[in-house]
Length: 133
Image (cartoon, rainbow, N blue to C red; front, side, top):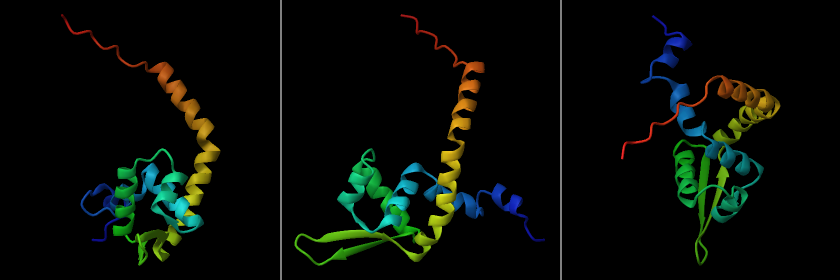
């Protein structure tokens, strides 16, 4: 029996969407991919381009993207050594779909914020009980 896409998505062990989106679906990965899509960057340049990312998060996300084949890390034999990050062919192939998602997000952001406001107004957070002293 051939699995339907829905069956595959629902199977956490074999779902390619879950597997890939776990790495590219967070805000840092998409920002790094978009930034590297413009041109290769050194680590410090990436950090300046995405100022609210921590050094540890940038390092971890770059390693994850490199492991998945989206990002290339090239070390230059200089003193001190220089490292540059760029997109691989696979990473370049992701830019079109990512750009479509970014454009959709920008276009729909107002509607999403409005939906959140309506939901929050209809579903106020539960008040925390103060601990007895």
